Image 1: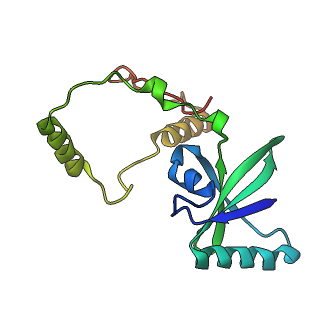
Image 2 (image 1 turned 30 degrees about the vertical axis):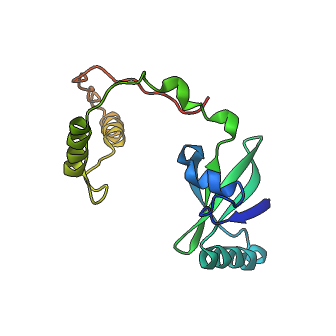
Image 3 (image 1 turned 180 degrees about the vertical axis):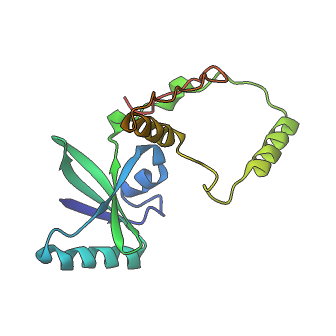
Length: 165
């Protein structure tokens, strides 16, 4: 595994800076673990060095038959590897931007007020309804009952754009 380190704070530092600013490139996160006794000291050394420096590491690794980049960050006592997308895996957003429209300062101020009213302190109010529904189907099948049916959608689905190719 190759490793580079950068703080992501200064515009003149390595490509780590761009990756840290472009969250669309950051994919799933995985906790890394030391693989056996021989790996415990290098793991602890890397974790403490990254933590004390306040920097993130970039690692190159093979996964699913493909070479990948990963962003290494510290979370508690663990190292987290965030898989990164290559440039060719991220769409250029310019094709998705709507035509320019005229907005008044009053409209923007109202939108800001709405955002302030909808602000949350955390994610406690959100529930994984899909998993709950799937568990209900599994439980019904396990008990030999007819699985529950999904309610009809209240509104037409919106347009979702995949950021990767």
